Image 1 (cartoon, rainbow, N blue to C red):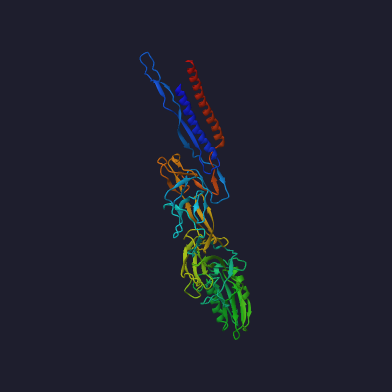
Image 2 (cartoon, rainbow, N blue to C red):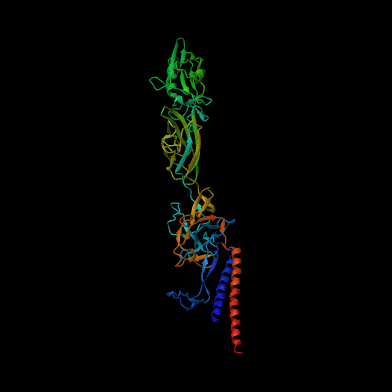
Length: 580
């Protein structure tokens, strides 16, 4: 009978512990990151009054006769079930989805604690801390490489609230554009005849347009943007008559005596009129027109424009205004305007001081054959900047070619040395990346409107830190007043072989034990570690409906055990009454 008393006492004690645990669960129903606990019971050693016997002949075996001695709390298990995630209005609040713990330290990383409560803030010194003042551990950006090395040891995450980023001089410009190869263009410019100094006939520097001194006439367009579409052998004739008619035929092609470029045609016209009138000149004027001038003292010229044996009506229409008389009094005759296919784009680049300069690229189609097309490319910067050792020093001309399928042929890149002449570091090397040769990942030349689809550069001016946001990998991304964003630090996460083996030390934190295993430190979203959700907190995983139901179960268990004691007491009282 005494055994039942002590069994009841053990039941009361065990259920008292269960009540304490459930009370703690309910008390922390609104504690961020809290994980509820469950009490597990087990029976005590039973008293054996008769051992088990094996079957003997015709007599069957007998089971042991045992009386249990009560119950005990065998373990209290922490349940690391995912809590619901609540969105907050604080961008430094972090919630973990799935497994893992944040790492915090109260002593600069000498000892680590682990938590699921991501209620973090920056203190006055820029330390990233939890509500206990423990500093969150992770990795910082390397000031030299600007990268975050997650293979390095973790340390305090501290970000200077007055952080600035220095200017980064441009080292690379990437351009992706299409230069129209078709028979009709919308982007076009007048052609010019340049002299050896780079000046056109009206004396203006034609730097921005980048026109070469000779253009393939077969690549030119009329004022409607329609290609002349010349083929080898296309020709026309000019008849000059100053008393004796002389016919000169001009044939487009690459053969001896043929013209191909604007300079070829101009010089052939010049030779023809010089033979008819002393001092007469043929030029290409600033309006993109061939111009014949007959000065005073020469011979009056009667000009006829005649279709050739292999007529090209477009070319004939261009030249037809030369028809008529040019008196020897300084009078002129001019053709219709000729245009070339062009395209321009510009981008701001930065020097070592963070000063912004405009880098302009201008393209003009200058030749085309059956295998490729060639465009003049002029790169220019505003004064007093320099990119060339030759005068004028603020522009550099080169050529870019394309294959017959529209892919880039050469070059794939071009380097320039920029000097701003404003106190910044000189000879700043800038690489202009135009794509991969024989590929379509950069510059192309298709039958489509000329357009720039992507133009980027890697420079920027200096800036001050204006805000921080955190991504799902736990990277703290700083936004600066210059419009740039950089990863400044990354929050470390820990996982354990046995989460239930961790020891709770209050304030929402845990420490490792011999049964939790060592922490495996790494990035979020790697290994068994979950992802990080910013502006969110993980709520307590306490289920009130379960906890309240468990209270009833524990209460009834406690009451039942108390009945065991009172009933045993009544039986003892009855026994004592036998003597009286």
